[in-house]
Amino acid sequence: MAAMPFIAGNWKMNGTLSSAKALAADLAARARASTLKLPRIALCPPAPLLAEVTTAIAGSPITLGAQDCHAKEKGAHTGDVSAWLLANMGCKFVIVGHSERRADHGETDSVVKAKAEAALAAGLTPIICVGETEAERNAGKAADVVRAQVAGSLPGQATAANVVIAYEPVWAIGTGRTPTPDDVKAMHAVVRQTYAQGRADSADLAILYGGSVKGSNAATLLAVQGVDGALVGGASLDAVDFWKIIEAAPKR
Ligand code: PGA
Image (cartoon, rainbow, N blue to C red; front, side, top):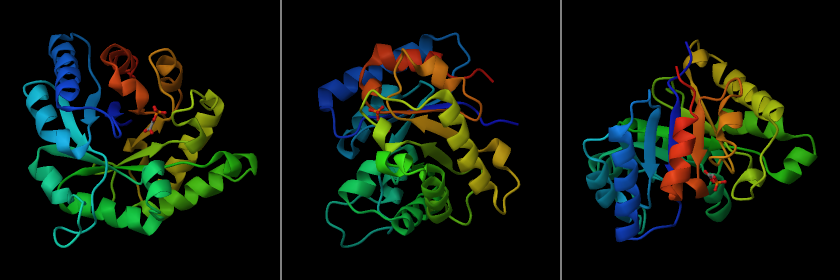
């Protein structure tokens, strides 16, 4: 059985109170009015906008997610946000290990794993991000890098019911470049095989593709075998384009 399709919007460090409200309300109205079999949908705004977005999506099938969490439940960690507070704010998901966090904040696989464990303990589903850089791909190391990231970032208690993995080649993020469908298929297979070590439910695991997904290429990328959805950055800031991606999600 394949995972339920899932489209998540990562707003990154964008938006204001008013733009967040307008974007979330527009998407919520589309979701409420839709007669399609919708995928799971999550919006991941910057933490200070979570309350505004949760109000705007109330009564719609859209769920709330966050972009990062700390590994600890509480304490002296100025500027950080705990998974428990995110759950308390209404989040169902939290992105961990995004390549921008790995690059900007030096997050290692063990840090990402600790954050994913905190998410699980707080009742959130972590969306664990992995992906190779361009230099790693050119050196023929993409599969090895991603295998190591998955193995090092996945909590021991991960199951297909409580985690999501996003394969996001770093060189495709925000660049307008995407891997070929064959490369996406091969890398998703690497992720699934690595997850499957010691686990019996790998067929049910949701593996999202991320990196320059847009309305214009979503149908192609989302039709690739082993792709269960998308983690969308730039295009998730535009209601029309993001909705096109939602409509292109696999129907199952
Ligand atoms: P992008 O970002 O869609 O803007 O390439 C994807 C991501 O970083 O999650």
